[in-house]
Amino acid sequence: MKTYVYRQTSANMPENGFAKEGQSQGIMDNGKLPENKKWCRWSRRHYLFIFLVLATLLFFYNVNIKDMARDWSPKWQKKYNTIKLWIPFKSLGQNIVSPSTTLGPTPEPTVAVNTIMFMNKTNSPALPQTENVTSTTNVTGTTVTYWTANVKVVTEQTSQLTTVPTTPVPYVSPGPYLVEYPYEYHFIINEPQKCEQEKPFVVLMVPVAPHNRHNRDIIRRTWGGEGPVLGKVVKLFFLMGLHEAKGAEQQQNQLLQESKEHQDLIQSNFLDCYKNLTIKTMVMLEWLDSYCSSADYAMKIDSDIFLNVPNLIHLLSNAPKSNYMTGLVAKGAAVLRNANSKWYLPLEVYPHSTYPHYALGLGYVFSLDLPKKLMEASKHIKPLYIEDVFLGLCMQYLGISPTDPPDWSYFQVFPVMYSRCAYSKLIATTMQENVDPIWVWTDFKKPGKYC
Image (cartoon, rainbow, N blue to C red; front, side, top):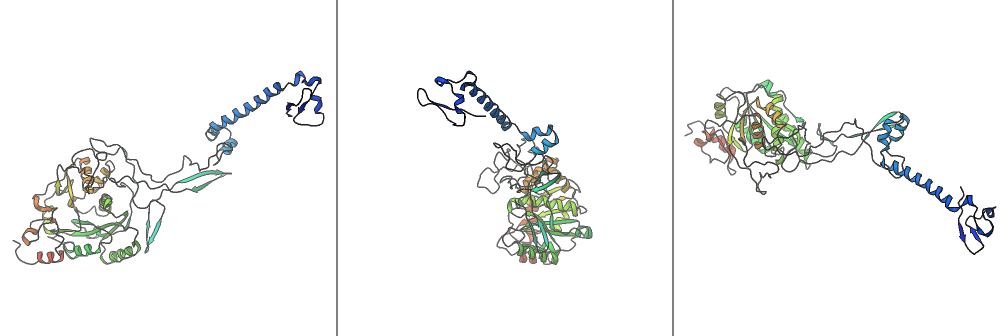
């Protein structure tokens, strides 16, 4: 198509903007155009064509060709199911995830609090608080696999499917007051046969930091090292998570050597820190349910506690074998709203003014039908970082209340000044910091009357 532009340069001399051979044939005498070639007629056709082209482009720009292509022929579907569309104004510069792609576990958003039972509205697993990127660490022959978001992209190239890995989903914390549980944690160091072989009456589970060899050795030399007590087998295990990054390999080597020497370490692949005490407690319950359910009772006890094992056996000799938990039971404990408190909980996380009844975490005893029940209940309760309160909420969900011990003085959260007489009447007490636990134990075990 030729376009003619006419510019009036003089009264009698119009000029064609595109001077070519025969250009004068479009001009008649007196500078008039023939009727069938008026400029406005060509202009209308020109603008109509441009309008149609623009309308077509705008249509394809605002329509998702990829979605429409599903209803077209296979050839069209294949053409538009690629990563980038042919439309020059709109290209998809990122991978398109196939609807059938399997995603790794992703963090659930915090759900609204149920003011009646304080339960989660979903049972979705939460994310671990270890690493937020893909990483597999081999520590002295022990493989530690951290969580990774296994997201894959499926694209069609010619006639075959190609799997393309993408960047892992970034770690999203559940917040400062919740932990990543339930989640599928794994045991790195384990003693899976001990309970089956020794058939204990009561299992002592001591949560401890991986680097705290000092406290473990003290417990082994004192109340944790006794053989059968009053004819009952008592078995001791230390439970821990993973080290922090600094010096982790050296500490793991030391743990493996210690495990080989004592066969009493249980280690799982969660990050061992104060905030994760709830995870530690739930992993303890998982281990008891999987490897020690044949025992009658278990006791969770902190590593800075003095334990009178004979008194514990006396207590359990008449205790129920099911739905039983005892210790220092807190009743009507107020929720701390002071943000400077170690156990602070904001109103939006826990709306009630008091907690349900719960056994304080320094040491509590429970029948071994409870671990499985508590694990199930935990799926319906927000995983608070305050581990003993969280267990109390799980017990409330089950409709089970912790039992008061026969004597209120059996469990002492505040240190009791040592004397043979005082320690002979209790089961567990926090120890004074300036007192040597080896000396206390040696003196306590001397023959003779206590009082």
